Amino acid sequence: MSRLILLISTLTILLAACMPIVTQPAGPSAEEMQATIDSSVALTLTARAQTEAAAASPTPIPSDTPLPTPTRFFPTLMPFPTSTPSSLGGGIPPTVAVDYACAVVNKYPGDNTVFKPNKDFDVKFWIRNIGMKKWDKGADLAFHDGTKMITTNIFYELPQVDPEETVGPFIFDAKSPKKAGTFTMTFKVQGGFCYPYIRIIVQK
Image (cartoon, rainbow, N blue to C red):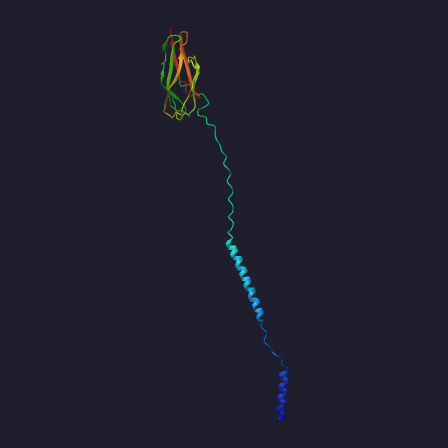
């Protein structure tokens, strides 16, 4: 009996010695765990800093295409038409509406006034804008045609004249011719739309 027990004990010990020893895998050391934690924290902080930098940098706004610089353009003003319309006969209103026209509303001397030869007198008249457009400032009024009876080479520079506005008087020194006859002297407003005139008779 004692031998049997001894045999069993011996077999048990032998079997135990032959069985592989199962060991628990060794875990990371404290130093390794700390290094891993430090690395994770560093990566987290780096990623966060990159995210904040990306958020702080605004998306660049595309620049607007520059508009072309406007070219300054100053047209040459033509206050009066360059073409010469039919004469108004010194103030006869036109039969149709036009942009530029005038009427002589009063004048001296009147038509066919009689003068002695070589007689001094004044020419005086008023004109009205009966066109649809204003007359720009600066148009000249001067002798144009016919018997030149004025004694000085003066001319008037008109102000701005609006439609239906009357301007004057325009006064010129004149002298009747030395010979008898009927004489006409015509003036002209620059632009050729207004021809005031006088007509006198000289008798000895």
